[in-house]
Length: 412
Image 1 (cartoon, rainbow, N blue to C red):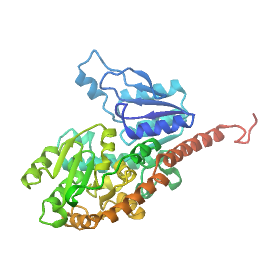
Image 2: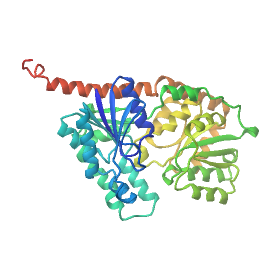
Image 3: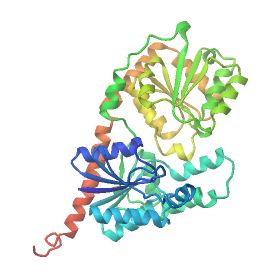
Image 4: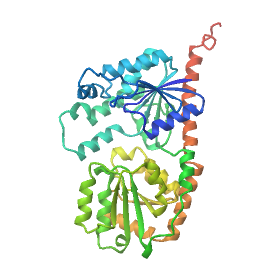
């Protein structure tokens, strides 16, 4: 099977794109990945067995013009020509598009080529855009380029026309069924870690706890306003025994980093809340053993209510107890597994109540053991990758049967 995959940014690197391509390659399939190229990388390249096809650079034009004209919009003729041209030349058997911005274009190309089309919805794109609107100053260009209402319209018009949709959580599956996508076309392929990553995390040496009974919290990821770190910082700054006994280490950066630094200073938490900046992810994973609780305090918005974070499974694989806000997917998984505690969205007092429970080392150890066991047995890419491959193979096989004159009652 030859899979033509559409990715709206540069590659490498994206963890989900890498895992999807790796699963297909591991099953013996050929993958042709079409991607953006703002940095002038080679137009054709092989990466870990994946054939990369990058957008040509307009070198005779100013770099700003080239970047703007390569913006991943489904009405962009540069993307249409690139995607259709590559997939025709490579005679792909199936088109797989990551996320919504280029989904209508991918659907149109697949229909012209008479190939099955699958869209991988890794997150609620309109919810993401709404969070960006709320977190940043208004820009007039975003009325067209980053409009959450337009994204909802594109979603409603496009996804029911696909042959398959991949989602990362059951909550998104149920939402798309309500939008009119047939349930039989939707496959849950979650953001779980690969076996190699689970093995690396599993070898982390766990420390015996901080001096003085301190509870060491850790946060991995972007530092943006919708990710709720300010709620945890406020909780730690309140005159509460459970809050006073905690430290927080943040690995990542983003547009809200300096705002959070200022808030930490204002609340007198310097030294107890430490911002390490963005480090290589493998290095950060190796340091997880220094901590007691992995924190995911994201606001319960449409963006986070229909996806699940990679770091949830990284925390669980490392044997950390997990503290999450009441986003339905993460809260459901943590509660079902018994891997941690859930606090009420945006409520510092609820954070403090849950930290009081997590102060018990025996409780944390039990939660960590259950979380690690759940990743090894259930929440891992071996299972999600196998579901992905089976879904795509089934579509190609069904398409071949429909195209066969024998299957249609004719003669060979």
